[in-house]
Length: 60
Length: 351
Image 1 (cartoon, rainbow over the protein chains, first blue to last red):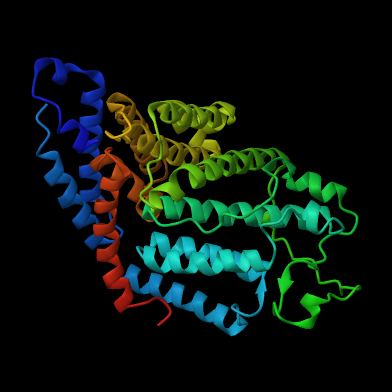
Image 2: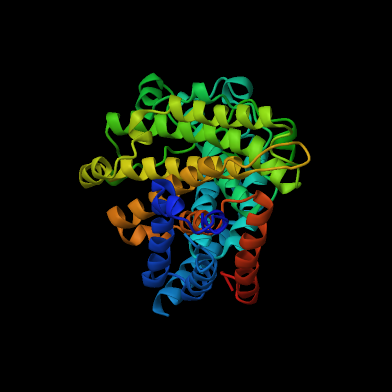
């Protein structure tokens, strides 16, 4: 989702689109979950970093 | 740290028990069942490479036991319970192989079968029809080159019926729902194996033209439409309430939904400029959103399960990062898996 959202231009229309908004929110939720979750710390840290880096390119 | 040691010790103990049994040259349904569970354990313990290797042994042993053949065709005289058991085993192996290989972008192995999905009966029905009960006659192969395999004896000695513990007994309603779940997942697995696993593992386009993509999407939707409603309900509150009384059904819902939408996302995201196949931007986002939300629901309703099920988390990670082409998934997934592979190669479970 992050890679698709990152292709969108920052605009009021895009920022108000319910689908884009809920997808962005879901990515944010996944980032938080990876940070909180136990399991393999190394794997979660790697995934958290990769997702956060991709998320920074989302302009909407 | 303590968890890691415990998990490693568990995998090691399971490995050693199978070795003592000589599982490689004495395949049996019981040993195969243990290996299927061990394979899931390895996946969920971040040993995807080890799990993939085990999965190969499992499928080969399933072929050796002829589980890929419909028992009505090759073993018409075995008991209904035994036929039922063989079909359930094949479905479990097919499902594990398909949804592991679609994540790893590697070729599927459980590809040759004539086992009929529709012939799968409820366990209680099979038991009711059964006058001979479990004989174990088709459940074990000692040596594929032995004379008893080439020229099997006419009289097969009866083996004791496996003991069923009280907690293993389920009600008739649950049994019926289980069969519906298994059949739905089975249909999905066959569709995914043919249309995603095989082409993606060879970098072949999953749709040759725009029409083929539409047909593929529609065929996936058909599977969804034909699945029972308890598997396709997506309303958060409904599922939350169901989880309080019927965790089994909700887990089945989430596993089916997660696999379905993840695959739909891959198809919707597929694009190929040469053949004019276009990315369905909103379709891919919608499928990815539905898919990732199954992981959030798993986390909300069942807490620890979400941290344990590696395949679930891996799918959710892919859904969060990317919904572009399967080739791009490959780059992300391989970085993750190879990083893990280096660690697991240094410290294999069982050593």
